[in-house]
Length: 186
Image (cartoon, rainbow, N blue to C red; front, side, top):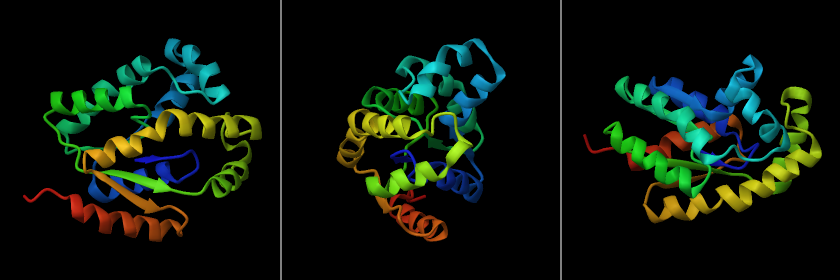
């Protein structure tokens, strides 16, 4: 899943995982769990996450590596929040090769920035990193570091861009329709 903060990636990734009966691997949830548990990793990334910055590539790659391999052995996975940089995309490809898995599609949820701001500000106290200043910073980071993945995956022929402004159920239906285009022949 690819999209700006507030685009609905988590909601749709969770639904896709349930629909296809595969693991939903959310790096955001993993990191927030590490922070809440006070683990060494959680303490290391707490301030980074709170500031709205991206956690360094090597940390995120270590966090997802074994989980992706395990999920591959059990039918597959939906990645949510990984990759977020070109470097992570290359690492994700290497992990997929290691797992003898194939990336069938990358779903890009497009939502205009004014709606993203409305959505994120509406979440209120739901997340540590959801104050107005941090939200704007997260969107800047997305544009700078994550948005280049759109061209990267488009160039690989695996990008399905979906209008994320639709109702949640309509977004999901559209995703399923578009994923049929990317389904393996077997």
